[in-house]
Image 1 (cartoon, rainbow, N blue to C red):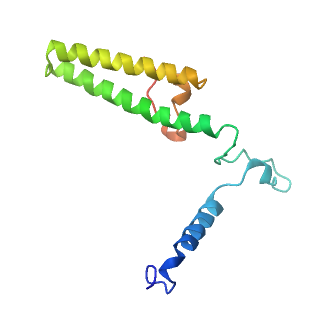
Image 2: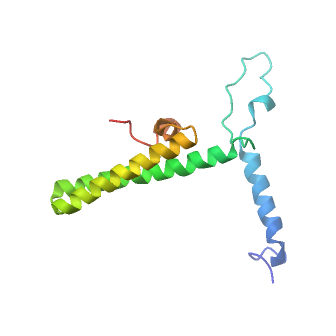
Length: 137
């Protein structure tokens, strides 16, 4: 049995994955310290590359997870406001929804404080696309 018809045994899936990872890493820009300035020219700006520091990996992972949770929280909040404005909720449902969103926001602030982050830290810069989260109102 072969993998994807390439003539290699299907048992070499780990080799395929390792090859794919090696190709992906070759496509990443070099780290700033690996860049030699062009001869006679000005040095280029720093390359954008993922850095994995073992000392901050937990905090970075928490930051990523909290960013996703904050994005979802804001989307739910907007959806709730649309439902309230459309008049599709009873007064009791509006109160419950508002209380739930306030508790969720409060919990997000607590989690940020626990990991020495702010809600602004969760707003990732997407380069030419702008920031992930809309500006605070």
